[in-house]
Length: 418
Ligand code: ATP
Ligand code: MG
Image 1 (cartoon, rainbow, N blue to C red):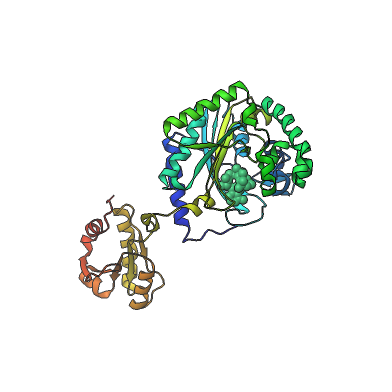
Image 2: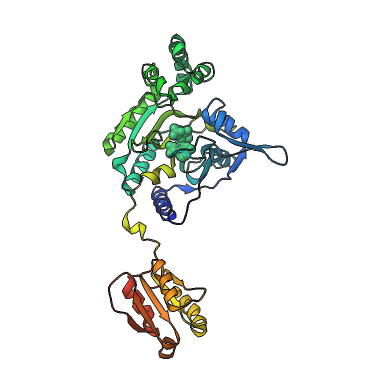
């Protein structure tokens, strides 16, 4: 679990702001869920025989003896919340959320025990139009963040529940015939959850998985038709993709469309964004059958991949550092700073606190990253002026009358007055 330090947070804010704007531009609304849920919720939704539930959850008993779990993902919580508050009764919901998720995995680059996701979920729409919308939306985010060249889209369809039941038999036959080649995990899964074998990260299983019968060749008519429509929309929108028949996702609730945005720039932690349809989940959790689709993207991996534009790096820099020499300047300076903040929308101004010589205050001003130092001392107070020093440009210092400061700031920092 990581601390995210002040030098990193501007990048997080940049990505968070971009995502929030993106959601607004598609008419999606934010929902915020608690970070803990009852353990049973995750077991029932994600599936007992998945990596997450088998070995990655932070589960504990609270003081009442109830079993709680730090959320390992957001979809289960989102469905629970939407059901509990009656958001799904004959309604369409287009929702998003963001926040920390917790999985007890082996920490490595791009894989942490507390990580952060943006999630999007649309309820009450059977697709494939909304499936395409979600993919186009994620595609727009890469464009917005200037990372389109780094990611590529993989698609698959998992068909209906019945399709998967039939396919399961075919798959079990295939893997049983090759039982000697299976690793221990896969041997166990052969009995419990054979589709999960295809999701194996073990390179030695790759060949066997590649030659396995493909679900996409056994799709039901409706899933097949929907998948074709989705592909057509993406073709028309100019979004390229690869059909990956081994894409099954690590959670049990998926059906029909599944997709991942992957990169080859982060080693084996190559999935940036992953999602799919989960038409059975609401009913499985006790609600009325409701079609649904969503995706989640990992912020750490996204930020790792991001090239941060110059202006973002400087977005949080101060405009002005106010140097105050002496007690009189102090009692005049803080109210003045308030006044300037009132008058100039977005002004970033830091007042020197803790006193100090002119030299030490100027050192702090320089370190603060501000463009200008305003100096207010006895001399200035007497003449009703501010001495302005340029900290980032070779320019002579200036004396500006106090009454002119607002105009001066507006002119010099290009800020809009309030
Ligand atoms: P992976 O295959 O890499 O284990 P996953 O299939 O378990 O990923 P999802 O549950 O689909 O991942 O989560 C969606 C996204 O969240 C992933 O694509 C990834 O970007 C991010 N993510 C998942 N687990 C972690 C983690 N432990 N640390 C950082 N990011 C993660
Ligand atoms: Mg995982």
